[in-house]
Each structure stands twice: as structure tokens, then as C-alpha cells.
Amino acid sequence: QVQLVQSGAEVKKPGASVKVSCKASGYTFTGHYIHWVRQAPGQGLEWMGRINPNSGATNYAQKFQGRVTMTRDTSISTAYMELSRLTFDDTAVYYCARDRGDADYWDSWGQGTLVTVSS
Amino acid sequence: DIVMTQSPDSLAVSLGERATIYCKSSQSLLSSSSNKNSLAWYQQKPGQPPKLLTYWASTRESGVPDRFSGGGSGTDFTLTISNLQAEDVAVYYCQQYYSIPPITFGQGTRLEIK
Image (cartoon, rainbow over all chains, first blue to last red; front, side, top):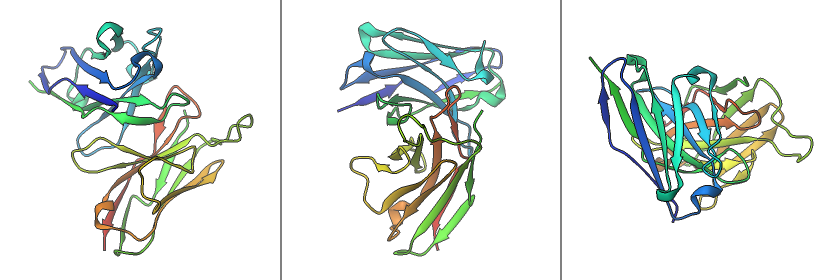
């Protein structure tokens, strides 16, 4: 079955960078976009961007342009999201999600990775 | 950016009754070429990732109980939960995928048992 498994929780200092991984299994990795969505404590969902695992092409939300980098390694069916210049406001659970293939809605999600920014 | 607005922010409904959540978009989500509305609904329970309920506004995801139904077109959409069960307590989000980037969500509606 389709599964997305994310890396573990991280604690970072302000100004640092964090890189979260999302390992896919149970389907053809290159056939579906991977999206990244974050959720601050007690808040709603916020879309960060997506990557086409086949071509490596990315689209980022304007808010994160210049600070986020999404990459993939097709040899191990893993997508990555790196966020730099962290601030306290970046404390959140970060999710990866797979699109259905015909449009940008998501039928499978990772378990989430808590990133805490603390001095 | 397309702004998605849900109402109400929270809702308390008795077991066995019906709950209706509304979602309004700042521009039409209806594609003239496909005649489909690019709107999805998700359910999120505490400590869990969101779960897809419906897409294309009214297509129920496989395995989702038929108590959940999505409706609407253009800029106005609904998620209706009939015969409310205790396990339906959650936060519900609408999401547009008509215009990307960015994908945008409603602010969420918290559903509780009365």
C-alpha cells in the first residue's frame, strides 16, 4: 500500500536550516507530485510547495521563495524539504503528501515531522 | 491568490443529526473545459495528518462512509455529514486546487458533539 514515512522531530536554533525527508513506497515514485504542507501549533494548514519527482521541477509558495528548497532522490524514492533562516514562527508540524495524479489533491500523507525552533 | 473562507468556525451537533460546513472561494473553481470544480475536503483528528474525504467537490474518496457528501459549484461549496457519529469529531478543511501556486485552504471548522 502507499506509504510516506518522514524523518524524525528536529530542534533548531533561530537562523539555522532544517531538512526533512519523506520516503515513499508502494507506488511509482516518479508518477506523482510530492507536496509539502505545514501546520503551526493549533493553527490551520499552509501549503509550501511541490516537486515533480520525475523532472525535479518545483513550485513554491511566494511566502517561502528564497528560503525553501525541495529536492528528490529517485534512487531511494525520497523527497526532501529544506527550510533555511529559521525563525520561531517556523515551529510547526511539516507534512509531505502525494497527489492523486490527475490533480493537486492529496490521497496519502506522511505522519508529520515536528520542527521546533528554540533558542 | 484564491481566498477560501469556511463557516462556521466551530459547530456542535447531536449524535445522529446532520452537520453542514460551508466553504466559499474568492473566485470560481469551475473549469469550463472539464466542467469540474477543483475543491477537496479533508478531515483532521488530533495528532493525525489530514484525511481526504471528497475531491472534485462531490466525489467521495474510496473507503469514506457515505454519510459524508460534498456539494456545490462555482464559489460556494458544502460538506454534509449525515447521521453524525462520535468518531466524526474533528477539524474539517476545504482546499482549492484550481489555481496553483499557491494551493489554499479554508481556516478550518471544528466539529463537536452537542
